[in-house]
Every structure is written in structure tokens, then in C-alpha cells.
Image (cartoon, rainbow over all chains, first blue to last red; front, side):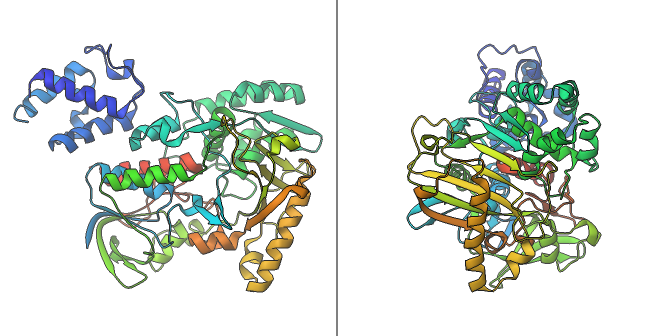
Length: 83
Length: 461
């Protein structure tokens, strides 16, 4: 998948996890947490949804990569290149 | 048959846990001994009418679209929508003690102003207490249980106000006699006084149905009439269950909502927990449900819930008598802002009950005692209600015996064991608790219990 496609995957996951949030103005450089009400349970769900969709395992020590949209896409691009 | 997770009990906590696991592609099976779902919050049909078993109101009310708080968290975690629950707000409720009453609704400022009016010298203390409770992290699963009475009495120095604040919170969720764990007090304070009450127009049914639908859509297996007779252990590790009919099912882990003492029994008492730490609860209730031919509001009763005590000191314990007529809860499911009236009027009145008495009666004695005490309970509450007796169409009631018969909870206990296992561990590997004895109570609490235990013990790692 291309970075743009991965970004869309993350947007779709966020829409599922937090349906009451408006994602159209998401700033890709800012932490998700500063723009949305997300707690640790929700972060677990981003990881779990990626696992469900693409069988990708994200170890706990890598969770810090999922802070902003940009960092998430950068982290996932090599891991989802064949997906 | 082998599953990744076996869940004991198809109540709110078991179903919520099941949804999480099935949604994330685990093979999961919920085993329920009863012929229907719901556990302590089930529903039934009697003489042509639908009743809820336990529901007075859903606590933790939040308006659709709210982004934080327990209700929003739970909808997100279960991938449900606000429409699945469709909660309508309460009209307003009150706590009534001799010489004082406090009204509250879903806007906290009402309670604050009521305290200021009735207890002017305590209002600053109340505000400090409120601040303390706001800052308290009730979701910390590693905390030790401490006495809420002691902690709250550091702020509130008027014993009457103290008991009036405890009364609704204990009635709706304390497994401990005459006290609560502080974290439980905070959970209940926020869910009742700050967030408040709501109810779906059709009661608990749409909630239960939304859960089962989601669970099954996600691939979860639900077996009714499938009571677990024994949890199978290998050394100190749970490996499966044996059903009442002898069938054995194996699993990587077992999540039990049966209760701690009950789960211990299912393990043939092999849980490495001190017996004093795994006693069943002793606080339970009788409730009578009157169906009436009028809207309660048309008779002059528009409050949603009244918590009353006839004595200044509130007694929350197993009574000597079959039921404790010194206090009670009066709930009218009609008195929510639905936009259209319910089909019939309903008045539910609840009183503390002595489970030994109710469990020990012979069947014929039991029937008549149930009726006698329903009348006594109704009579006591008429002090707080218009006399609606000429409007009664039908009456049903339940006792600790009813609760035990359908939920298999020892002592017919509603809020589970007095000593909770907040982290859900049992001392046996791969065997975890959810539901009342993990310790999140109430409709929303029990679902969050299932979710949290599923996340912590069955999904991570």
C-alpha cells in the first residue's frame, strides 16, 4: 500500500473507534491525543484493528510510533508495502 | 471442542467481553445455564406483560455524541452506536430522610444547590469532597480497598448529610454492608450524581439484544442451557470446563462472571485465595413491581427514583426481619423523558432482604410470604407516593430466592462479593473474573468490566 492508502486505512479505523469525532480537519503532524479524545483503550484498538485487517503484529515497544498520523504512516509503510 | 476463550455467563459483562474477543477474531464461546440471556439484568414475560428483572435506570447518562465518559467509552469499545441504547433522561430523583430531602437530576448543579440550601454549613465541605472525588482515579485496578465512610467523613461532618449521600450510592452498588470501597463510592458518585439516570423506552431488552446481535455477527458462539459444572484445572492452570450434561470443552483461558465464591466452587475450592477473601455477599433485595392503569405522573408522582430512609441513620445491611422496611427505593420507569408514554404505569419498590429467610422457606410458605411482604413494602412507601392502590392491575415480586434460582449467585446476592478482585485475577493461571466480583457494577459498569478484563487478560500479549 502507498502512504496515502495507509493514511486512509488509519482514518477508517479512527472513524470506527471514535465515530463521534470529526476527522476531516485532522492535522497529520500533531498527536492524535491533542486533537481527539483517545485513551489507552483506543490505542490498543488501533493496533488490534490493524492486526485484524492485515495480520500485522505491532509489539508494545513500538506503540510510540503511533502518536501522529505522519509517524504512524511512516512506521507502517515498510510493514504494509505488500498488503 | 476447543476455544481460545470460554466465558461463563451471558449477562452484560460476559456478552461485552465476548464481543471484544469475537470482534478481534478469537474463537469464543459463552456458556449460560439459564434458558435466556441477561443474568442479573435479564427480562421476562409474565401474564402478557414484559418486565425487566433488575433495571431501574441506566446510570452514567451521557447525551449522544459525548466524546468522553464511561458510556461513550463502552460504545466505542463494542462498536455500538448511541442509537443501540437510545437512552432517555430521567425527570429527576431525590433522597428523602427524616427532616431533609435532596433532589438531583442529570445536571450536577441541582444537587449542589440542594446541599447548599438544606445543609448550608456543609456546602464548602461538599465542594471540597467533590473536588477530591473528581481527582480520584477510580479505574486504577491496582488500588487497595479502603473505607469510603472514613474517607468521605473527612469532608462531610454532618452525619445526616453523610448518610443521605451514601444512601443512593449504596443501594445501587455496594456489596459491603454499611460501607463501600472508596473506589466504588467514586464510581457510583460520578455515575449517579454527576452523569445521572437514563432509560431506553423499552427497558433493558434493546441493550441485551444489541449485545447479542453484535456478538453473533462477530462470530461468537452462545450456548444457552449450558451450565458449567466444573472448571477443569491442570495443576494451577485452567484448561476448560465440564458442563452439567458431562460435555467437556477445552480452552486457552476461562473468563468467569459466576462470582468469586461460585467460581471457587466450580474449581472444587482449588483457588489459592484465603476463604475470608472469597465469601459471597450478604446484601440483597426484595422488589415488588406494580403495574397500574394510569401514568404515575397523572396521579401526582413524577419523580424517577426516590431513595428513602425512615431513620436518620441509614442501615445498609442484612436485616433481622425478612425485609427491612426502614428504607427503600421507589422507581417509576414511566418517569423518563421519552416523548411518548409507556403502555402502562409501573411502580417498582425495593427493600433490603434477609437471604437466609427467603432461601429457607418451604415452597408454599414462600409464596404467601412473598405476597405478604410485597404488601408491606408497598405500604411503607405510600408515605412518599400518592395512594395508587386502586389502580393496580397486576403485581409481581422477586426475592433473593428468585435471584439465586436464575443466576446461581450464592445468597441470591445482587452486587456480588464484598471483597472485589479489581484486577480480575484468581490465583489460577488462565482463569479470570469479570462482572460483579471483579467490581465494576451497574449496567454500564458491568459491560466495562467485561471489556476491561477481555482487553487485559484475553487480548493483550
